Amino acid sequence: MNPPSSPAVACILVNWNNAADTSECLAALGRQDYPSLTVIVVDNASTDGSLAVLQAAHPWATYIANPENAGFPKACNVGARHPLAAAADFLWLLNNDTIAPPDTLRQMVAVAQDNPVLGIVGSVLYYQHNPALIQAWGGGHVNRWTAYNTHFRAPADFGPDTYITFASALIRGKLYRQLGGLFEGAFMYFEDADFCLRAQRSGWQLGVAPETAILHKEGGTTKSRNCRTDRMVTHAGLLFLSRHSPAPLISYFCFLALRLGRRLASRDWQAIQAVLAGTRHFLTSQAKRPAHQASAGRR
Image (cartoon, rainbow, N blue to C red; front, top):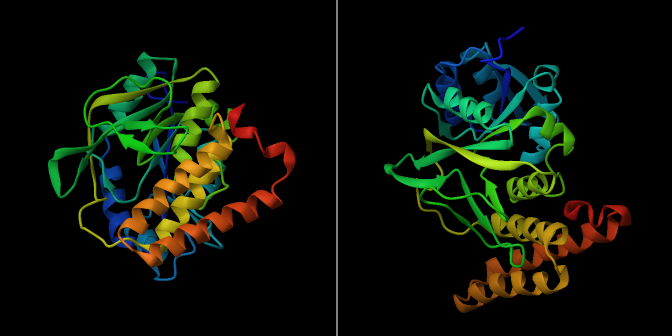
């Protein structure tokens, strides 16, 4: 049994056709100076052989092979149901394109132990291509009327309508179980804001380990707008509003007006089609959704 000073932590990584980044992330996890860490890699049906590469390079980690690419929140929930994770005191959700210095987990656990009201503890994220620039000071603010979200770039208070980004989030195991894990309605996006708002409504608070400094590869290169991303963000944003907006119908209009307006202004017809496709996906999923689930997120 672990001593009280080092509660058991299960870190969950999701991999999909990205052995290079995941391997670098695992190497950093292998250097953590925290004594009670288990690492679980959930592979979302990779087709490039990356699972075998990772298993050979890092045999000390635990691997779960999903039969399909089920998306980020569902993969995290699959990892959380593994016996090693289910018995852990904390779950550490970590993006596979991050590099965590050796003292990261120790710093996060210390903040959680010093503040029993904190259900989720985030990290300070820096851009890997510019380590002097903060990408997110733990998380940010989300607007429940428009789904517009912004990252904090400096120390901030995590009050109402704030969230910890799940690029790195230490979550108490009992909170994860209390909320039934991450909402799986969307393939990805907004699952962190959804979970954090539900946690706050259940009486938990959010915090950040201020001495952490995780490098995050997101944003390292400039990419053109991806229509698949536009479609997924639209679907996920509408789902988020359906669960958290004070007036969902008004919020749908505002959200879509903002997304379509920007794309109309630039005459990006492919992006407009992607937003409309995401809207159709949302409407179809809502029509199939059991009535008793309609207000689940606002409880």
